[in-house]
Image 1 (tube, rainbow over the protein chains, first blue to last red):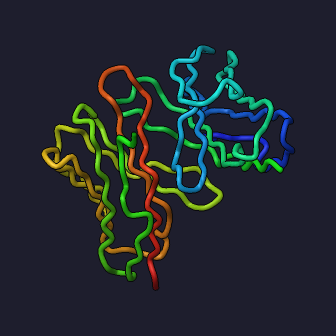
Image 2 (cartoon, rainbow over the protein chains, first blue to last red):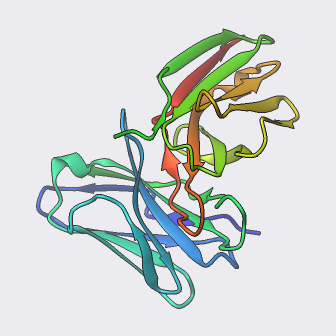
Length: 114
Length: 113
């Protein structure tokens, strides 16, 4: 079974631009979560989607948004990029019926904002 | 307010010895705890979990111990191997239908040959 895929793997943008990241979950997984990882801040939860609906949201500004399509693929958008948005963005998929919400992560998209 | 804390940013051990990674939490209502391992340029991978009603779970070289009275859990790796060198994250699941995992900041483990 193919794992979680994320595209692109690397991205360089400048301040003020916007960016869209894509995530394809494991086949059969309908829940997709997004995380931001920066040095010293661990994994910061952005949001979770299921059935095209946002179920959970972390403490990020409105510049960060996402959506999920009917095939469970998800996109994350960051508008008006700031230098502090430079990070590894991780997508994770999961089954809804497992006991402890085991998350299966993709390799991440490394975003650099100049 | 960090509900899950990994107070050691890094740890170095010799190959063959035991590695002990620690995690403290503040919310006694968490019902599951998970450990993930992360290599550079890869996403985290699930390692082992423990239910809050257990005090130990073992899987091969990996054992997780839970001390509920101290709100503390630890991951033991015995024997440690160079391939275990990675960042280890502790995560906790709130009870009920809240699926949002709460993550620690991670501990970077280096296993020296």
